[in-house]
Image 1: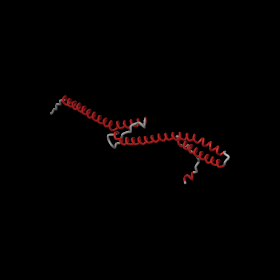
Image 2: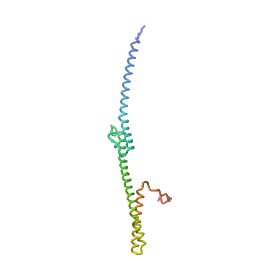
Image 3: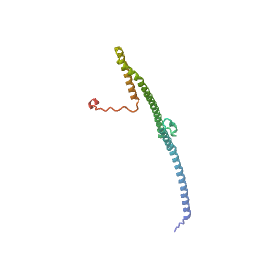
Image 4: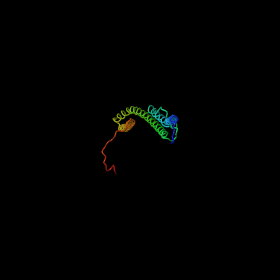
Length: 186
């Protein structure tokens, strides 16, 4: 008969040593992998998103004073989604800044037109009174001159009124009216 003698102690110790080595190696690989994934997510996703969000918040707080987003500094990769989003945001901010500047200029122009129109009304009032006096004159040629002057002052007053209406903020009021469907389709 053949008998085998195993020394359990050496194999158990070897298996334990292997398990310990495997555990530490697996922990090292997992730590390195996790660190690489974290750094990659931080560099490729989190930081670009923070730059975009910071730019949006700064623009919302003070669009005319905030620094424009530099699309080249958003992401390390030139054509990834974050870089594209950064370029689009920078373009949108530039367009909005231009629109805000135009609106500010138009508002200033509207204020100036309102002041000029008010001054013109003050200037035209004595001319209107004079034209009415001239119409009541006994001489017919003076009456005609008064009528011409009155029509001219009325046209100027109407121009001032229309200019003021245009300069006021807000869209014009809607003019709702029934419309025939057949002519509209034609």
